[in-house]
Amino acid sequence: MTTERLETHESESAAEAAAGSRRERRWRADAGDEASELMRYLNRHCWLVAGRDDDKIAAARRNEAELRRVYGRLGWSVHIDRDVVRLRKSPPARAKAYADTAPSAQTCSWFFLIVAAADSLEPDIAIGTLVNAARSAAADAGIEVSNDITERRAIIAALKLLDERGVIERVDGALDSYVTSGQENSVLLHVYHTRLLHVIANPGTVDAAADPEAWLAQVSREPDAARRMRRALVDDTCVHTSDLYEEEAAWLSQRVRGDDGQPLADAFGLKLERRLEGAAFVVPEYAFRHANELGPLAFPGTGTRGHAALLISEHAGTYGAQTDAPGPGWRGLTEADMIAALGVLASEHAAGRGGWSAEYSDDVTHLAQDVAELLVGINALRILGANVEADAGVAAGSPEPAHMWWFAPVTGRWAETRTGTVAVGAGRHRRPIPTDTPETPFLQELT
Picture 1 (cartoon, rainbow, N blue to C red):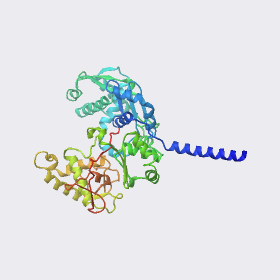
Picture 2 (picture 1 turned 45 degrees about the horizontal axis):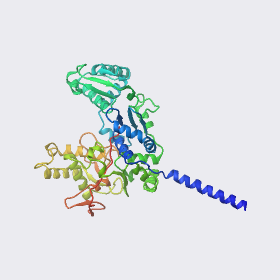
Picture 3 (picture 1 turned 90 degrees about the horizontal axis):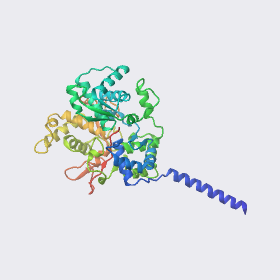
């Protein structure tokens, strides 16, 4: 009798341990609406500073435990105090596409030269004092300076980036006036020295100046496939099945709807959309007022470029080739066919009020390049061909005729025609558009 009871107790203990393990794996999002809204905002704006974002800083302090728990599942960290909230994200997986829309290399160089110089200066300084200190830092680093108007433009662009982050703020004077005048006392600045400590989100252990490629490889490395997938869904427009390694594809197949992906979407107040071709976290319509709240690249968007991108995506969904596609559901157009189609669309939409801008209508090649930049930026287009890598994005100058423009399956969720249909499936097969308004993909700037 005693032996039976012991065996029963051991069986119950084993069952409880197994259940506990399952509960640990199947985490649950406890974020309320306030925390979800705040995390969506932080994904787009990685800095909250006192005096400008007091309400959001207070919300971060109230929800600190949940923010750390959710961001911890992405391998990100968040610093929270009364003066500043700083989300430290990993580098973007699609680094080339991000770099194509990032500030210029000269602006980025001055950004960090100014940060290095500001550390040893007084809190309130004239712009000339800061710039001269930054030039000294450039000389120490072996960087040539020219003191011309192009360099001053880069300096002002860098200062505006620091002002946006609340690290070095303009107190008096117009930053742009320094570009033309170069007067050292034309602008008064205030340096927040404690915030300088949070500028570099991923310092790493490799010397970035001595070996930048090794440094980037180190800070970008993430061996955990599940964490890579969580980051991609939260930090990019969508995930394409055709891009995934075996472990990543297994996670998408087995865990995105269940114990991992769905709770993560819930934590951010997002909707999980899963299809055979991939998956996306989608922002509900009620969660934003303007598309630019979601990121720097809005699609569908206003203006000639946005409208042209929408129509050429529809055209590709209807007439695009499928042979040698990057994956199931992708549609391809040759460069010549794409430019010809844009030319026809330009002639149809150039005239009248609200028509396409003359800049684009008169130069379809320019329009094609800007449309490509938009669609590559939101992970909805690949330009493949001779000497072009799968993630290379838009080549400088006019693309070679041999290049193929491959439109991702996700473009079909917005591709409306005049008859009210969406191009899907093989050939010209179509299905009706849903009666509800399509929701906009979650895309935010990476900073």
